[in-house]
Amino acid sequence: MDENENELRRRFVQLREADSDRVPGFTQTFGRARAPKSGRATLRVRPLALGAAAAIAIAAIWLAQTRSSSPSAATPAIATWRAPTDVLLQTPGSELLSEMPALGTSILDEIIPAPLNRGT
Amino acid sequence: MDDVELRRQLERAHADCFGWAMACCGRHRDDAEEVLQTVYLTVLDGRARYDGRSSFRTWLFGVIRRTAASERRKTWLRGLLLKRKGNGLEPEALAAPDAEVERDSRRFSLGNALAQLAPRQHEVLQLVFYHDLTVEEAATVMGVSVGSARTHYARGKARLAVLLGDSREL
Image 1 (cartoon, rainbow over the protein chains, first blue to last red):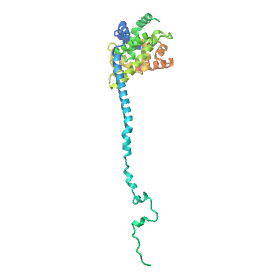
Image 2 (image 1 turned 180 degrees about the vertical axis):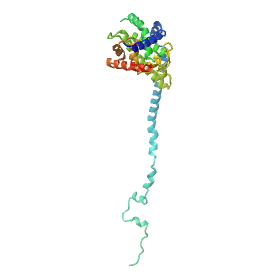
Image 3 (image 1 turned 30 degrees about the vertical axis):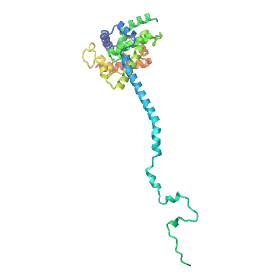
Image 4 (image 1 turned 120 degrees about the vertical axis):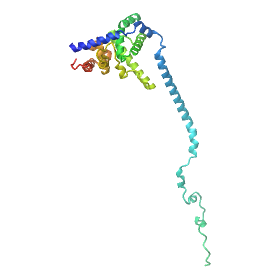
């Protein structure tokens, strides 16, 4: 053991001596340990635990409500919704495609006048 | 070991345990006392049971170390949840000067120097020099291999020499 190690040991001894003046009595510490736990630790932890439990409960209720109310609120909105581009599907003459054509007639009959009888 | 014998052993080691608890709690006296109370309760409840594989003091030091670490985690978590500062092992708190120990300069006091060491270096030096444990016993308390404890011991001594302003190697 060299001189420096002795010096280090001496410093630690001083530290130990300083600590020895601050040591709480064994009976006091032991008594507190044996006493029912009603002290600071419980009081500090309990609000945190209660707060966490309350936050979880609120989040769970909010999620449950959101999920249950979403479908009924969204369904009518989807049924009545129209895409803004629907207008592009309305092309000229589209009504012709939605009717059954009659035999012996032409769609041109309504557009082009019947030819005049030339008397031949 | 019955309750009477347990109490006798705890009483015998009390002052030593308090010193170790102080080291584990960044030299906060109130925290050290609270840790010690928790340890005594744990031992009395039988949640920590001495199995005779090491000396009673070595085993008890291990329990104190684990309890202090657990308390530190709780304090850190509380600080995080409450966004409160000033709990646990703030660097300044760790470096709290000890008036009785300081001799020449506050900056270079042993307490401050120890606080600047890596935790394991601090622990092994405290156990060896303050509590007169062997490096092997310190390794048991710290839950590391003897080789690892020796490494921490050597590096800690060298670093402490620098911090204490001694240019010579210890």
